[in-house]
Length: 344
Image 1: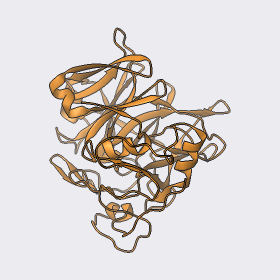
Image 2: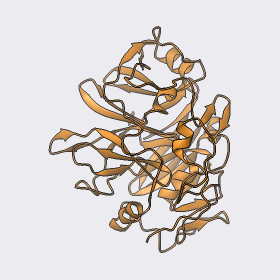
Image 3: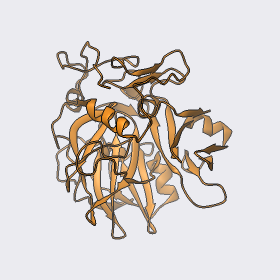
């Protein structure tokens, strides 16, 4: 099940984080949306083609496959430092955020919080507590995936750091209680004492600062006073407003276990999991369709567009229950879940 990454080397994340664009001589990296490892699954002709090297998601073989195919992202362990003592300010006190800047919003226990992408891009993890409950907010800029996670070991809440490694170009976290390793998108430990254990996910709202602030004027905002010296307000990967750099091209910088050309590599989808099955709802399509009902893993679900926040959510019809979903770039979702259905 091992994967042999293709050469040539191209760019490393360390170089991005220094604000540069190109670095030669970094072994084991791939460039371009079409690069996959030898023996990986491939549906480059536009339809899924699951191979023997793509075991069922969440199986032991799947965990083994992911564990065998990690790649260095450049910085070492904790080289991208998590925020462990987050400070929050009011919307009025927050400076440096432009109206169209992306924020990841969360409402929990009656409290609204905004985590600016311009801060998370430098840290990727915020180990937070809301209403007395621990929640770790995670964001991987390489795969455009952001959501909260909760887990425990021996009755104690887990907190997370960055390993410096990637799986399918996605953030590989470790928990500080057992040193088990967790790909963010998979949400399951692939190495360590907690191997096979799943994290509980907490959905974030990917919106803009002006829209979130209008919807939640009493929101608290993650401050740039993190205890670290970073160029907050500048994104080492490019820009979302307007799209540029890494976010605007089709390049995938690190090895992935599969590819699929039904969508552009960085098309934003809502990755949905339910009953052992997965689906990818094309987010931009939701802006026009407004609401799409579908069945996944035996559950009835509905993707709904939210005009106020200019985003989409996946809900259980007839209830306030939110499904297990998050925004993510198509290439990364497919690399983890090649059996996924596409809804557009």
